[in-house]
Amino acid sequence: MSYLYDKQGEGDPDLVALEQRLATAGYQPRRPGRRWPVAVAAGLAIAASALFVVMPRGPALPVTTASGEQSTLAVGRWLETQEQSTIAVADIGRVTVEPSSRVRVVETHAQRHRLELEKGALHAKVTAPPRLFVVDTPSAQAVDLGCEYDLAVEASGSTRLVVTHGEVSLEGAGVSSRVSAGAQARSVKGRAPGVPRSLKSGALVNAALDAYEGGAPVEPVLTQAEAVDAVSLWNLLARVDAAQRAAVLDRLLELTRAEGVDRAKVLALDAAAMEQLWEAFP
Image: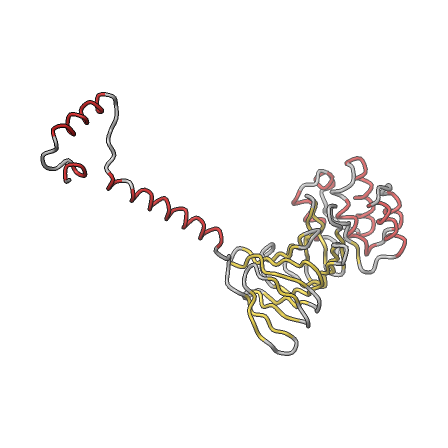
C-alpha cells in the first residue's frame, strides 16, 4: 500500500500502466493523505472568522443603582432600569440613566465608547477628546465634543438634547446640529435634526424657527432673533440657500458684533472661517 500514498516501493504492474494512460490525458492522481489538512485549514479559517465577528468589542462596564446594587453591562446587552442607575464609561466619564429607560453598550474601546438609548433619558458627563463618546437614539446620534448634557427619547421616538457644559453634535440624515452650552436641539425620526435653540430664546423666535423647519421663509427668524439666538443663526448658515446666506450672516454679525471674520470664506462655508465665527460669540 506504500506505493498508493507516496510512490515508494514497487507498484502493481496493472496499476502503473493505468496511471501512465491517465497521465497522457492530463490527469494527476490525488493522494488521500494530502486532502484532509486543506479541509481542516479551511474549517479553522471559517471558525476563526466567525469568532472574530461575534467577539464583543470591549469589556463590560460597571453599573451602580441608586440603592447601591452593583453589576456589569456587557457589550450588546440591554439595561432596563427600574431605578436611577449609573454606568461608568471607562475612565472618561459617567452616564446616569433615569428609571424606565432602555440602554445598551454598543462598543467600548480606546477609539470609541458608544451607547444606544432606545427609550427614556440619561445624563452624560464626559471628559474626553471630541467624538470619542457617542450615544445613538432612534432618530439621531449625540456626538460628544467634550461636555455634559441631558438626552431623552420620547414615546414617538423623537430625541431631545440639552447641553449644560461644552458642546454636542446632534447628527442624523446627513445633517449635523452643533449645540453649545445653554442650548437644545430636537430630532424626529427620518428627518434631519432641528436647528439648535438657546434655552433663553423667546416665544416669537421659536415660533419662527418652527415655521422655518416646516418650510416657511427664514426672514421671520432673522427679524425675531436676539443675541441669545446666535447659535441658531450660526447653524442656519449651512442650511439656507446660498442666496439667503448673506442675510443670515449680516444678522448674526449685527447681534454678536463679531470682529475679524472673513466674510467671503464664511459665505463659502469654509471650515476654518466657520470655526472662527463660532468662537467669536459666547
